[in-house]
Image (cartoon, helix red, strand yellow):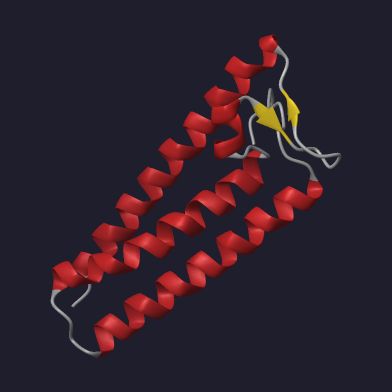
Length: 119
């Protein structure tokens, strides 16, 4: 999490993202294991990228305290329901959301390279 993080999700919403992160990672590992065990062609292993990407987004939203969907709409949910971000907060939260998306993309690309490189 960056030092200047302006959270747009509270503890309950963060737990939800953490659960998505764990389930996505487990699904990605299970999918890749099954694809490797059945000697599926390398390109078909890229199917395991989808749950990994969802998991990476979940973990990173949890870590950064930033929901990318809410950020896109200029909203936050710190525990008392949805509320609009103040005008001066929108840019900061959207920058955080872009960082989450970028990091999830890089992690997913790394995972895809590993999936393709395995025998």
